[in-house]
Figure 1 (cartoon, rainbow, N blue to C red):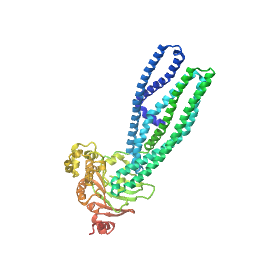
Figure 2 (cartoon, rainbow, N blue to C red):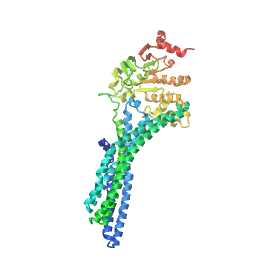
Figure 3 (cartoon, helix red, strand yellow):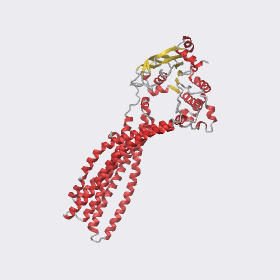
Figure 4 (tube, rainbow, N blue to C red):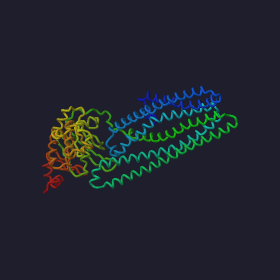
Length: 570
């Protein structure tokens, strides 16, 4: 995992190297002050050499001005390295999410995924900047102070540095407890984000049913769980921090006690003891950095681990030897197809049917019969368990997913519009389309006149999920999007079920125009919309029950006739 983390520094090697060089010089300057102090107390002040005292003070001032510039560079450009690494990881994570199968998103809440992209990667960026820098500075200060202190008195130095093994043992002991605690905190934070996202998305439903208090109470459960997990994390952090602070304080006491003994024994003088006390302050800085680094390490590596969990989730694979689907005539055949979303009950079992080129097939029947599942299988949103699905006689698994989906247009009941302009939502159907082609698609969908009547026309913002538009307007924009895509195969999955009768009749005109010359699969509960289909299949939870035209199914007196009469009886 560390090797995987380090590779993100590759594009910023120069800036990172400059940051480390500045950190090195800043550390050396920190080691410079005790040397000057000892020299002054030992030599220049007892001899009354005011000139050298002033010169050394001026040198110190210049050195500290340089240190200020070094710290400025470290803070500004060092953080830039962390920010850019965070941006690269976020780009990789988002891009990888685009390749994951729908089953992944079925199992993971949107808010939890959002947390991994935002807050988790922020902690990773902090580690990316401060981690190497703090570790490097700590080593330089520890080694540098040891060398300089040993030059004064090696035995006194060894006594002081004997605290390091104690500190390391303590840090290692507490590290795992902190890591587990912070990991639990992140999971609860992700759960909060998921609940917030879910509640805000459904705010209209909450208000309609006056369930605001229920939503608040539900959120408070997640909130309390987060508080509890953070308490555990802070408890582990407090044990770590207080323990290292005690070791530092104990170190000061050891220096004073040992210094007094060494002075009484004539092994060091007052200037040496003063320098040692100053070096302890220098020595404590890397200890504090180690404390800070440990916290960053827990946060950052936990975040990076969660990042890797998603990055290691397999993408939707293309079968070996898969080729581009280019020319499509439109003949579709399902042969003995079985499918289940999980280990449980099969949704489809040995389903077989054929759609001739340019014809329309309607799938009707009670809910739970697998009609929408058929629509999800054709573009390979989900993989079948058994059987085969072919287009023009070739198994769809022999084609790349991208080329297959480019040949299929989908208009569903739950229209999703992006929170951008009407123009961009239509243009999503084909990103390289010209303005004239977008306008023509809107005209074919019967919504051009409405768009042009708006003050901002095609630049009108639709709001989140198209909230500023009516259901019929959203459907027409979705239809325009498919007109622009111009696919040879069309799927209409309950495309009008959420509309009133008047709007439905208007939309059906656009859908009929859209279906012309295309092989079309229509899923509908309103049987009035499928009377003109070339073939109608009645699906139940037991599979395909009936097949035929509207007239044939009515005359057979089966399930279709019962459903039709129940919808049209007076």
